[in-house]
Length: 434
Image 1 (tube, rainbow, N blue to C red):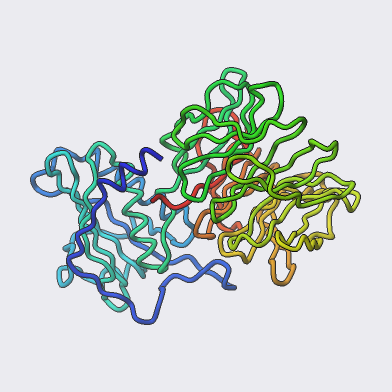
Image 2 (spheres, helix red, strand yellow):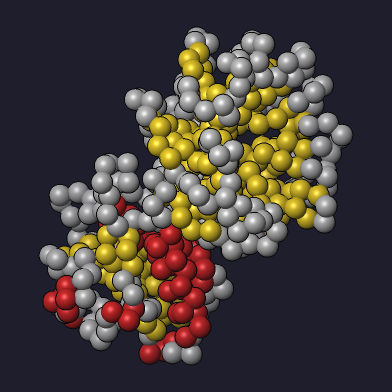
């Protein structure tokens, strides 16, 4: 999060002109029935005459921006071999007929200009069919952080076509093996810029972000018991939150930032409790003979989805935090676990074991109970977590043997395996940077 604060400090946008599309977003939502990726042309980034020796930076900037937009699943990026970019950048200089002939429905043009220690990024975004300029602006970013500049530009493009914020400058927390230990790391959504958060403790597991992105709650065995801790998202000294006898696991901070839902076994059985941010017990949420675990907050903070074995095997349940009223959500399969509420409140993603004894990702519609499969026939897939705009999932996969992370659309039509070294587990997608 240090990096995010630096980006926020240096990122400035000078808007020369912006033409809004009155009829609303151009690119639809993957939850809205049939969805087709939007054909988008993103030519190579140009360099200002004074910056021609920065070709490598321009190539990296284009690579990051294009990679983000492709990974989002919202766009069908046209092969650069299918068009020739010889026209201008701005307004009347753009030959829209040529881009229509190349089957582009959207067009993004960019130019980098080195100015002192910063890059000025001129960004031009068009709807090709109408010839409308959707965005014309200049971003100012530190020249030493070209990757962040690419992510920032991708966010602008995503917002221009969908009307929603992009998630390309968010971070993902994950557990990774290091020299026989397991530690919490954070990374960009393309798997780059990996940073270690925890040190010591042997086993550090199950990270979860605070809503403001400044802290991560996790379970650690640093005192030979699974205890709950909080640490700054850029590292530092962990603060104990709950060191009660037995399990102190699966801590999740409420959307308002004031409470933590957690599994404790201090009374002999694994039950859900509500803690304040200093670790004091506010309320016991469950009291059943089965094991209750893996809480996930609804966006309004009124409900918690969780896993319970009270039906005889792990199933998903929903609990009203104030009243304690509980209902069962899953009735198929014998092993349903790791629920994750969508930030929109419409879906819960979860892991289930199917008839082939393989773990896959599914989504459950909260309103209708309808269950849809996200993955199939690609190894074991587990531990889903939603992006903060609700359009993407991150989860673990064994499709390439070692456990890697996958960024996927909610319907599973676009899945990107992130390059990585070593085993990665328990991904948690962080909030929008502030």
